[in-house]
Length: 325
Image (cartoon, rainbow, N blue to C red; front, top):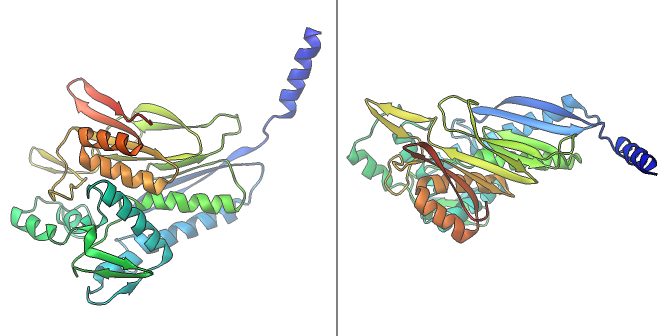
């Protein structure tokens, strides 16, 4: 009887084996790379790859400050006296940005573009330490309250307002790609754009997708600090350890504090946020990174955010996490 039971269990297991495989797509976008893994028995690789490339080009044509003809570039060059019509995609991300801006008390602010460019981290200008006079002048052009949205019209209350979505656009791209895959009926996949990730379903072996949070280092893929099994969620990480300005003996983070106009100086080196939306996770990772470990952790707990912090200390790195994480 025991032998028969074992055989029945074995046959049942074999009959349920997943004969699907993982199809991999890779390429470049938004100044970084993308990776898409789809679990399927069969798919038209050429068609799916073309759809991925087309979608990512469309996202760039909306949010890239490096493209002269992008929607955000047109907004940045538009005079403040007349309203400008914006696309539904732009309006959606502006609404999400405003929500994070308000809840973070301005630590996340897409209008920080003039300061990003001043320090040389944007498409305009060389990396250098600006004078206090220049900083104060540019800070006057920063503040999400300086833009007004009514219906599908955007008005800049300051002609020098400059939007920069580099801290949230990759997450938006991930979300948009997930909609494309799901429109084709795919329910098991992993999407990554420059470290911002969305996972749905499982791999053919039945396991959830395992995502590694990097230990801060100056080269990609050196060591993993933590492994997270991601179940139908997105994760985004903001870090200060790779993109930076070195001037003499001083190192300046590329994360700009919108309040001071200067790179952050606290000991927080990376923040990872898990959320259903990759764009929201991306934006909140930036906001918490700007706030620092104490303020960031406090707000994450107050808002019920799932956040994981790595803080530099004398022994290496200290891990902090919100209650939800």
